[in-house]
Amino acid sequence: MELREAMRTTPATRAFTDDDVSDEVLYDILEHARFAPNGGNRQGWHVIVVRDPDTKARIGELYDLGFREYAGYHRAGLVPFAAEDDGKPPKIDLAEARTVALPNEPSHIWTAPVLLVILLDTSAISSVDSGLGRVPVTAGGSAFPLANNILLAARDVGLGGHVTSVLAREEPALRRLLHIPDHFILGTMIPLGKPVKQITKLRRAAVETFTTVGTFDGPAFMPPAS
Image (cartoon, rainbow, N blue to C red; front, side):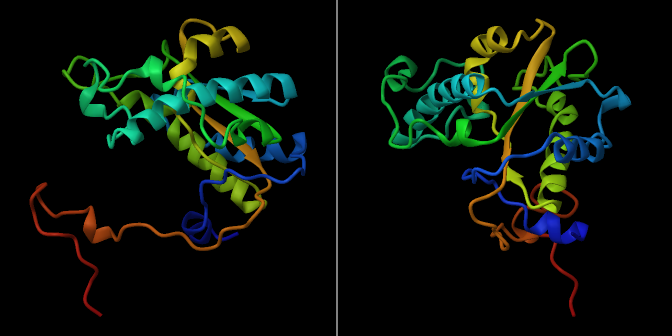
């Protein structure tokens, strides 16, 4: 598949067929994805390939717990875990939210043939925006290009998945489950498989709605006149 077509047609896939993803195909995806840009070319990532049904089911349970909290914010009409609220008390009762089961539980997580848990080595990655009095985000720059490359390479062979951060809400339990060392943190997770439905058209905001020239309040960056 041509690169630009893949970029414009790679959706967040959450419904999978029963088709397996072979080790051969998965290795080829990772073989191409590993060339993703990353800080200092230190490649401070580690990917855990999870196929065991019981382990996938447990990860699905942890995901659902995190998503109950996420849904609690939605019910309150709030952005879930808004970055501007980092370090502040939760705006909802998280313990109460965790007791409210969701209509789609158990979630789709366990139905994916394979889960890719992407970790970051905190001794190898840089967090250059730490200590600025707001939520640090730059460390994720060493995980998300790899994750996006995985999705693009998967799209090229007719597979799909999505990047999810919800599992971070249960990172301590995930550590115990997957024997993750203390100096590694969860970057993201990708459930991967063959989509039930192949999406060929996505809707996204136009460039000029989120791009300005010169300053934040500068004029919108418009397409060249034809």
